[in-house]
Length: 139
Ligand SMILES: [Zn+2]
Image (cartoon, rainbow, N blue to C red; front, top):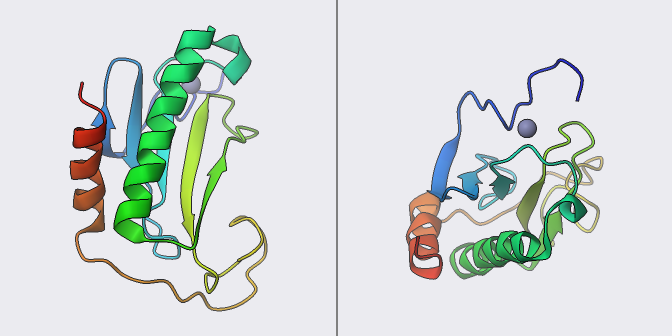
């Protein structure tokens, strides 16, 4: 890190679905990928291997709970898990529901669009994912 402020250490606006002292789950409001969530470690740590093994496992337990909740609610054709952090070197995982008819399938969502995406809309999806996370991840 240079002297820039980390966007994940100092978030301006987040739609929080779940949190504990270790990490948080936010709703990424993306109409092209409804159900897109992000799991963010609260501490400013660059790589998964900077964490002790038990903390790596704890974070992945949360990532997999989010994957399960998004699968149940959004019923996507596929889930993509991504940890990039090139722009924001602070451990976070993208949990992205994918449909064969979405804008970029089968490429990564950051690739050039192949088509106008067609994705299902589920009313109240964020609240449904939030409710399921509370069941899967008791604090
Ligand atoms: Zn940070």
